Length: 265
Length: 290
Ligand SMILES: Nc1ncnc2c1ncn2[C@@H]1O[C@H](COP(=O)(O)OP(=O)(O)OP(=O)(O)O)[C@@H](O)[C@H]1O
Ligand SMILES: [Mg+2]
Image 1: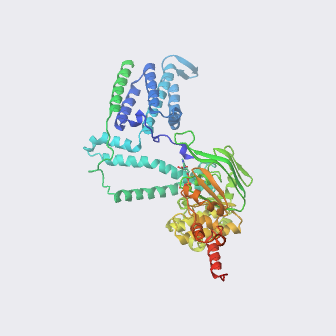
Image 2: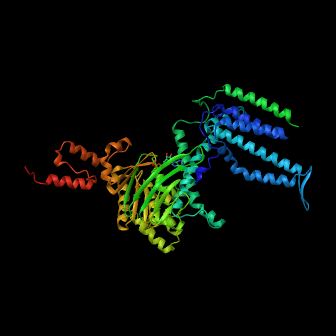
Image 3: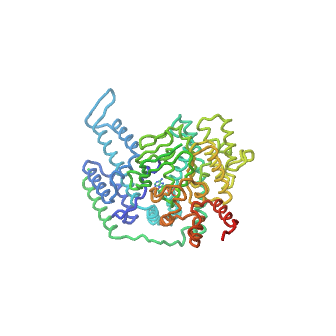
């Protein structure tokens, strides 16, 4: 049932993207997001699409699987497309019906916006698909470390994030199991009106909360028992290390920035 | 109800990089009224197998027949028929949610549209079977019980639906020996009285030996052995390669037999502890014929 929602889940592998330093990947995504919004014509958008396809190839993951990450947001994309088609005016009028018009600029913007959203989502899911939660949070912690000086609890934030990421699959599994157990007792979650359906969630929600609290308590105990006392003085088993891959990423980043800058109008 | 599996396979996460073939071409027949012991190492597919019985998982290929209900990849089990198959999950106490024990046990019967007074009568019966007193337990919160009591309440919640097929996934894991025995004896009793077809997943060879009259041995998603317990236990070597073991009684018999002359050896069908003890006592008290 629920295991089909594997979106954003780390898929272990040995590709270039898998082995690149998470810090480079994070920084690259920030840059890519900026570039996506700098692009403003057909050429820049084609370049960005081409580049994304190339990156997907580089990850050696199945294309259809990555495309699935668009599934939860296609509604959002559709919504913005419709909004733009009907609201944005300018250029040739393609279609008119009373005071209703579809104009060139509207269609153009609709296409561009959907491409941008799609690319951003594909790219960020590539990050989570190729980076283990541990690496991801460590990368983030290292990148945000300077903010620690002005009192931001960087280590705690990173720890919270890694625990959350770590427990998402566990809680999904747990939910799946509880749904099954209650279904076996005749609970029906798929029929009835909205109020009834909401009520039917109680047999799932309560056991789930209880188990989440129990897990949290056990985790806290286990961490303390093993001597955890915050980030101060804590060392790492596997230190992040920049390699030639990260140099390559930096070069590609510079090149891409230049190309987009050159072709945008 | 008779249960048959015909070339059933199941794959988790089909179409994702996490694909995993958890069941492979399982074919089996369980006659109506049988008590079936399912054993196998961790991860061998036991839980996956039994979740097919009431349609919580549908096979990726193959066909399952339970009584007159047929389940195939495209054909699901009708909701109303689910009550015929009672499934007790691993750690069933994690599914408790109601304010009181009585309400929680009634959850199943009420879902299948039983009138409240009948549901209550069934809850009473079910709690007695698992060895809890209805009057003292009914108004307590399930979350204030001990682990073993919670387990019993959860099992009662399934028994109260009065299923015709009872499936239990390690119902006694993590309980004390006395509690294990009490629960299993209760289950065995209603199995006989109500002529149920019962499937018991267990890691304990002793439990399987004691109650089962048919054994299924799973390994790596395949069914590697099925047959009467004495047939299965005779293949001690094969069991050992699957990291399983024979019950204490069976290894006791084979060790005694090594030092006994052939015509005096103990029959291997005596894998049930009581029968073995009775047999030994009889032999020892019988006058020696020289
Ligand atoms: N929801 C799931 N998604 C993906 N794979 C699963 C899922 N549930 C089980 N599996 C896999 O299927 C295989 C069989 O699991 P199953 O739970 O049936 O084993 P089991 O025999 O019940 O083990 P145990 O004795 O530990 O309960 C395992 O390899 C497991 O990793
Ligand atoms: Mg299991």
